[in-house]
Length: 302
Image (cartoon, rainbow, N blue to C red; front, side):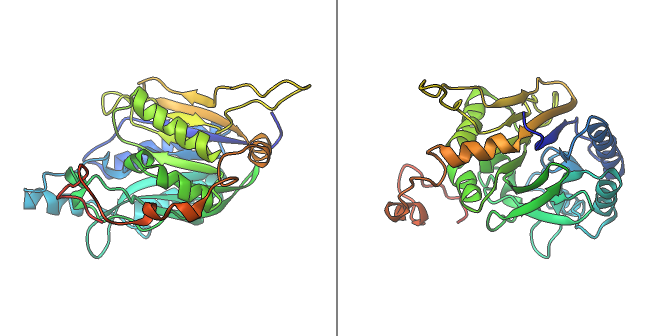
């Protein structure tokens, strides 16, 4: 392992619902433990401030109360996370229901170790077939340069259902991301794990995913370094390797992943995936908004 090692803490914490002050106090404890363990960046599960909770869209009173729980970067909880990042000299990826002038959004903000908000991403692929029809979707997949003790690293994000669309990670890779943060809130299984591995493999990017533990979900928080093959040595062909840095069980805890940035960058320089041999002139259908059977869904929002 090189000296340029980025340690990411996956905060697989049980949700606190109905008391945002207590929720953020628990997040603070998790961040402090992450820093004690040498983390450069701590990642929370999806929509931490209310424990990923959505009301019945047919209940106006419940919807109104839920919208009242949304926050902005100017509100005390996120001001607190900003100050904590600065105090700990550690980046924090804080997740929350974001208040807007219209519908709320599902957001993550990365505060760098100086407490600056260097990246805010809003979930693009909202689950319109379910209660996330109450959310407004984000626009685009921004990438930011995060200054860490391990050096600068290009970071992007996708939230839960976003990772089930190859376009999300592909755009982030094209924008220069080296590490993709994935706040999550769903039941984890081998198919979703395979999807996540594919996103890392085909784009040669590191991925860090934090999920809720049991009984909220079933954990499985995972980090992958995107390096699927060992380099060829002494005339031998390159061999496959396990990209997994950590995969949690279903229990609550702080799980660490060490990303070897030098090795990841060397891998991206020599291997054939990512943007090396793409043929974008042949991909016009990828931006065609028409939907044909059998994929017609009345609730889908374009």
